[in-house]
Length: 254
Image 1 (spheres, one colour):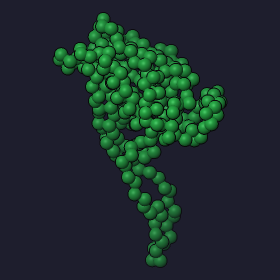
Image 2 (spheres, helix red, strand yellow; image 1 turned 60 degrees about the vertical axis):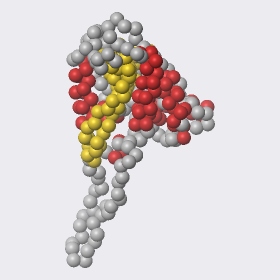
Image 3 (cartoon, helix red, strand yellow; image 1 turned 90 degrees about the horizontal axis):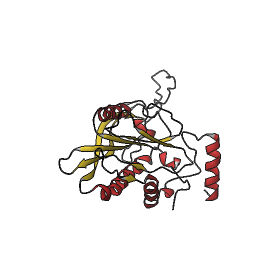
Image 4 (tube, helix red, strand yellow; image 1 turned 90 degrees about the vertical axis):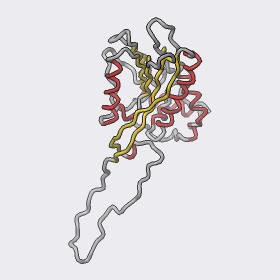
């Protein structure tokens, strides 16, 4: 089954679902690029690992167990009655893995381009954002090209200078053209645009048809079985987008 939305499906941004979307889309992009860049280049799936303190609802990792415990102290005849405490959560230190793509020259293994799909942790204050910002600055200070894909409405977007009007963004920053870069911005009701991936200066650039890839990932993963389209979205849509989304969902009986 296809997504009821013609572009980005905002229900895919759910914290427990996004890691699956992210990983499947990284693989899909690598597979789509390989026939366009081989044999001079290869697409390599790589990962960075860091420790972060995350609230449990934002983790989105299936193999984290939380053991329920006692939330109130036991009353004892020999001890004075204690005031009822507030129930809070403590930060959970955990290992976070984020996958990304590099395009490497087969002759010398040189990285010519990096393709990043932003995660929620990259867009909120904390170790995830700082780790990604540090890597981003290193790339932007080099001759390596960067493609940065932001399909998340929540959080703080990564810094660029210029007119910013739409929710979603794809940044294409060629190493030879900086500080100039190209920004593909689009809203909820629009089809995700195709974009080029830079190689070495002057070389023909492969094209990623991201909408097609996302649609195929949605169908292969059967994300429709994991999504309750009647549930509330977080963050909320604007009033006009919410009305439009309601009409889209009504058309499929969701």
